Length: 177
Image 1: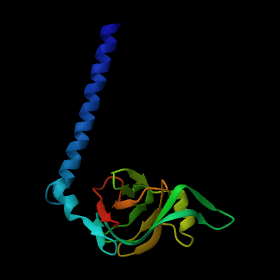
Image 2 (image 1 turned 90 degrees about the vertical axis):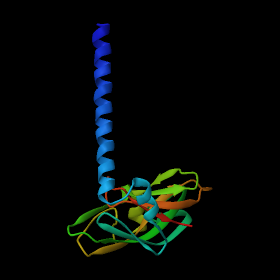
Image 3 (image 1 turned 120 degrees about the vertical axis):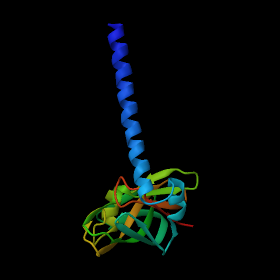
Image 4 (image 1 turned 90 degrees about the horizontal axis):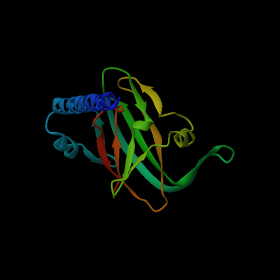
């Protein structure tokens, strides 16, 4: 019984390691398709507010960032921040040849210490009164402008965004300061 359990655990570990190494190989090979090493890609893809930054089929242009917001929405319906909301207004243009889904949950924000924050899609619905930007399919050549919302602790300051055309893309960095 013990030998069977031990063998099963070893087999599971080998399979898990094999799956993990396959994922790593795919990520490495997709990075080389775009030219250069992974570190060189990240360095070359950093933009500032107001500058277009491309990842895959999307061109992102961050227009502004405003933190310290306690609530989004109206007096009757909305969402309160656990800490503070940071509202990031950006334009997203499809530069590809096929429709692409803009997934708000794929967008990340970072503090100076490297802490990662996810986009708050519920708060984003209240912040974007006229247009949804969170599961919006954008056709080639079209663009949307919307507010991405991040709920972060009150004393934290965001330093950069990592924007993605999909959950599996390499992403592009936009400096906020």
